[in-house]
Length: 193
Image (tube, rainbow, N blue to C red; front, top):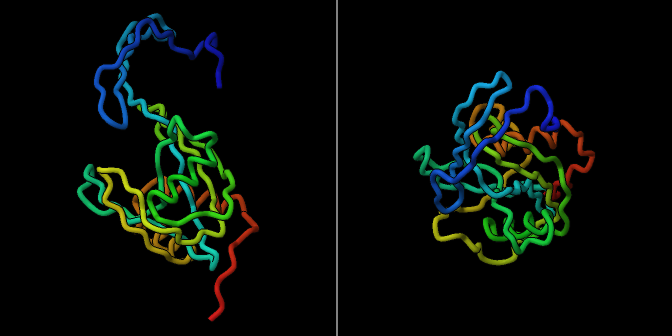
């Protein structure tokens, strides 16, 4: 991160919430650019999120299918959710979101990476986790505004679906790519027969 005295840094003169709704706020800031120009800048601000790539004990991947109103269709991808104040650590948030959205519990979780997915217009921060040994634990615990069903698929099938432009959720694509890129070496076992 560049220090605030870096010649590229903008100076924030004033900052406030222009619009607030459940899940995010839009902030408006008056800023001074490096050349001295003063202007407004608006951006979306939201809590940090966790993205979970969950593998079952048999090596399948648990995915969700969720209605996304902004694009008016069902989106297929990985479980994602906001970090809550009660979460003691990010791994706890990943475990909680996995149970809430899929009804699966993980034997263990491991941090994969953290990214700023849209830092040109949002302060979003996504923490990616891999979950191993996931087993069904009961019912989903969906929020009032979530329409989600969980399914399982093979990692290879999910990767092929992404390669064929069949998955539009950027968090899912990024999670699978990071998992592949980092050569996890811990490919979950496939069930025999």
